[in-house]
Length: 159
Image 1 (cartoon, helix red, strand yellow):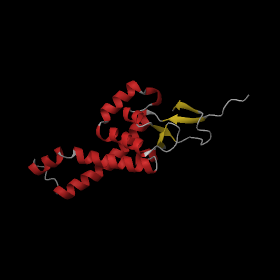
Image 2 (tube, one colour):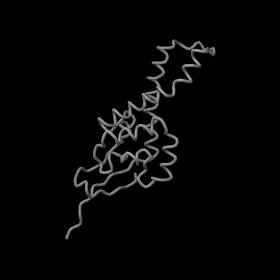
Image 3 (cartoon, one colour):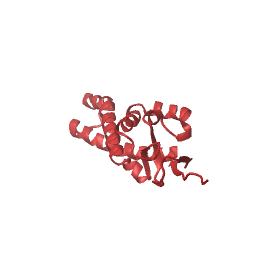
Image 4 (cartoon, one colour):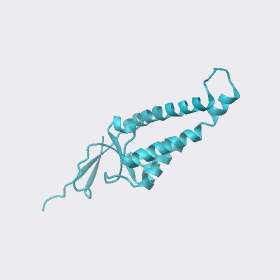
């Protein structure tokens, strides 16, 4: 009797995921700053009430932009700009496209609670290198090296 054939899913390194996040952060932060400058004008380097107000109220709108960016791109393609550059992809636990709900849960953790999400992920889900919200949403971040054959017999390997 022959052994079943396994697909191999290569789970992305934390460092690769961080650099993909950093690229995405730079892209979205630049866009957010351009929007803020267009709404509030240029900075005159004096502490004006208008600039302080813009700086302190920027977190929630920027987080919403991050949430929308990650949700839309990762649901449609599994990749953001950062993930595309580093050959990473968000998938379900079988290497297939994740569902909308899983992507939204994963994106929420990244956009609004990232430090907590990552720290608890390191401690509680380190085997598959999942953040807590990846675990809740049944998603993985993988290196793109998947064979599409026989997904029922999937082995996991750390990069």
